[in-house]
Length: 100
Image (tube, rainbow, N blue to C red; front, side):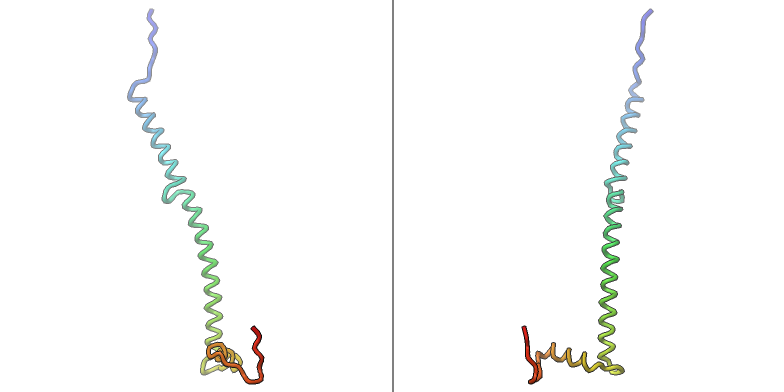
């Protein structure tokens, strides 16, 4: 009786090598790729940052709209007009003292 060892065929070895390689590649791409998990986390953080920046810009626009309305022809705030004229022209009244 001769004992014969059973070796896997070359085709099975190539199949498992290719399968393992493709599995590794797709796992790496799913985690580190252009649309992977890490990129998705970066996009989420950037989206939160941009949303907070948008909120700040909305507040700034509302403030500027309020100032514009207060200096319009329909509604004139004399105190604001006086303040703006002093800031732009750098003028003071004769009875005022400037402290730096």
